[in-house]
Image (cartoon, rainbow, N blue to C red; front, side, top):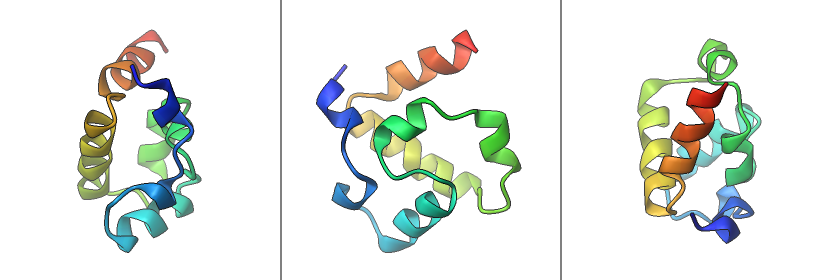
Length: 76
C-alpha cells in the first residue's frame, strides 16, 4: 500500500472537476477520508451516485489503495 497516497488531496488527483465537487459535497477532501468512511452512510447521501463511486474505485486502484479500502470495508 502506498501510504503517502492517503494524504493526497482530492484536488491533486487528475480527474474532472465534477468528481471533485461531488467528493467535497460528500465530505471527502483527501484519500484518507475515503478509507475511513462508512459506505452505508455514503450511499444514503443524496450526492452519492454509482458513476461517481466507480470513478472513486478507479482512483483508489491507480493510487494502490483499492485492496486496503476493501479490507477496511469487510472489517466493519
